[in-house]
Image 1 (tube, each protein chain N blue to C red):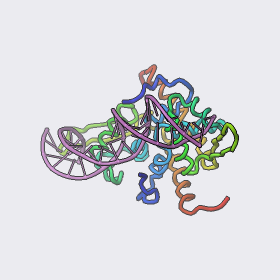
Image 2: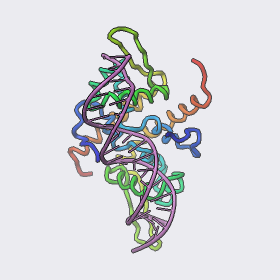
Image 3: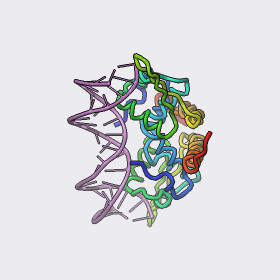
Image 4: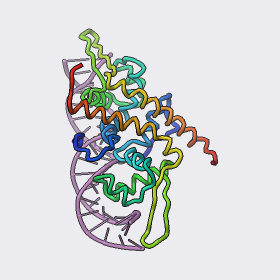
Amino acid sequence: MRTDLTDKPDNCMVEVAMEILGGRWKLAIVYKLLQGTHRFGELRREMHGITPRMLTRQLRELEEDAIVERMVYREVPPRVEYSLTETGKSLEEIVYLLDVWGRRYLDRATNPRKE
Amino acid sequence: MRTDLTDKPDNCMVEVAMEILGGRWKLAIVYKLLQGTHRFGELRREMHGITPRMLTRQLRELEEDAIVERMVYREVPPRVEYSLTETGKSLEEIVYLLDVWGRRYLDRATNPRKE
DNA sequence: CCGTATCCTCCTTGATACTG
DNA sequence: CAGTATCAAGGAGGATACGG
């Protein structure tokens, strides 16, 4: 499944980070959770197009990697809240910079200009 | 293949960025090129485990997305050099932070400690 | 409301051999 | 040296229906 993270020969930890954070949804979920705790259904609505199955899988993987915390309230109807761990919150600057970079990239791609 | 980047409904540009930079090798290649221009063979040797086919594909995609520049020298034997564009260089801080994050993450995973 | 169960497609990645 | 060609496997991601 995942290559052994401790078996990275040289000093490029970018590969380690991308192995945990890669994929289509992970960092977008972190982006949402940086704005505060969310319930399953809230995330589902805000993530335009994700299926419940996918959302569950991504959240479980993030939980295993200690990025996300899952809090279950045994009520009727059931309530489950997701939030970031400290490790998850430590991604704030990276996610922010990626957001900025993506916005600028899109601007350039949309109205290209000469150098 | 790729979803239309201009068709992202809300303000989460993280998805845009990950669509361009996601995958196993892209940011690791950027990491190497931040240290200077590289030839194909140099990258191949430094990227432990990448096949020439994969390296070619990743470099071509990065070239299409204007992250990487390809310079062909018509010599014998042939020489091709890869370097970052300005857009590529603008990833420096992100790549640096990902490297740091990955290193710290690995430390925590290797010698876990209680809070 | 918060998920699971099933079934499915196709992209990503890889191994190996070969070429200008 | 710098790639292509070919073949193959596996997993990421998706559609739909159902369960506690």
